[in-house]
Length: 244
Image (tube, rainbow, N blue to C red):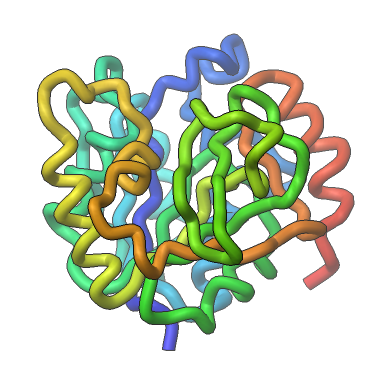
């Protein structure tokens, strides 16, 4: 069975996408006939996940109104990161995990991805499973260093030439691994780490056993950080989505 819940981090200002995000959160940018958030929520619903925690901050009223209008059947809990302008995803996730117990899917709210990626994560249990695209990575991307499928290190700081591929910001955390990861997130969300990404907690976990890559190479996805990412998502990625 899939985890009963999911966490979507959607609090940030997305300043690098301005002017597209001057008046709306990034997750509500048009993406074909839908928004980025629509693609994510519909993919979660398709695999049976209806209990969803959304961390909000910037332009949160728009996100709440959109979900209330289009997804009344989902059980959505909102967690507010009041410090969204001065903290990053590590702190947003810590706020969410104060409310979320057990297994959960994790999604960055700026990732455009095809439903098949969640379907590929769904059967896995007994560890942490990171959706990874095998490719030559850029410096800006979150990269993984692996031994087989076991993740040894993760972060933007890694040498692209030595890495297995890019972690796309979609994952599944289950069982004892989820508990260990939750404890590390809470321990690391402290003064001095305000601008850390949540992957920092994965990288510094004392026990990384069970942290695995799930190869999603060839399945359409892109993290939308810059205007060129948005154009690529609209013009190239969506064209590869199968009709459903």
